[in-house]
Image 1 (cartoon, rainbow, N blue to C red):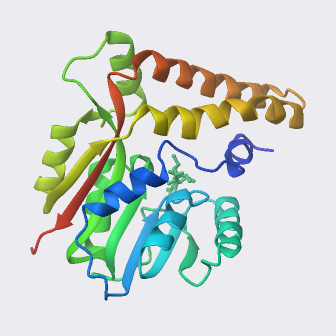
Image 2 (image 1 turned 90 degrees about the vertical axis):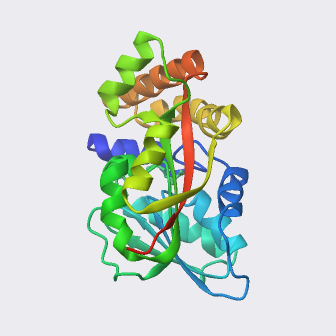
Image 3 (image 1 turned 135 degrees about the horizontal axis):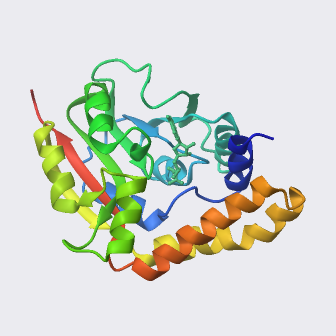
Length: 251
Ligand code: SAM
């Protein structure tokens, strides 16, 4: 197995592939002015195995195109959708988020939880904006500093991992500069990180190592995740995912 295949194998059976919760998805949705009569077109970009896709499908009229780079995640999402009788509302699409085959102004809502960082926040906004109808909404969660000043260790770690990391005011400025008007913002809670993402992940470590016979590559994945969890626990007062909800202005 390649390193990438191992990483997919580690995440594919998880409820979600990043911090979040059904409550967070619904809270973000609550900022969006939705016509209850309308049948909406939604794209969920970087959907993983679809935790938020299923919540959206259960709470919106219309259809969702759920996009991810990895077929294994999408297969899992299709299974989950079938079990919940939501298959008619969700279509999966194996594509990279920087090469989406969508039409101009095709979508009412673009959704992306913990995934836009793969191409960068600003680049993602610029790349995806044309797919959104004027007055349509974008909702994205993105790693964000909670304070203006941070301890050196965490500052250096994240500047190295993701140089685009910024405070919420910095991210909102980027939304405004790119023709969006912010309608809502909140930080994900510790529960969304620890109870919903890291604790279930920690429970998978042993079985994953066993399955891969304690290979060096498997051990490296587990060690990397352990370090990330330790950093989060230590510095959780300084960072979280911010959830940004914004409306596309007429150009
Ligand atoms: N939204 C899901 C969630 O919150 O559970 C998944 C979040 S996970 C942190 C990031 C997702 O982005 C993964 O499912 C990964 O496969 C996907 N991804 C990474 N690079 C991508 C790309 N270039 N195009 C589409 N999806 C990508």
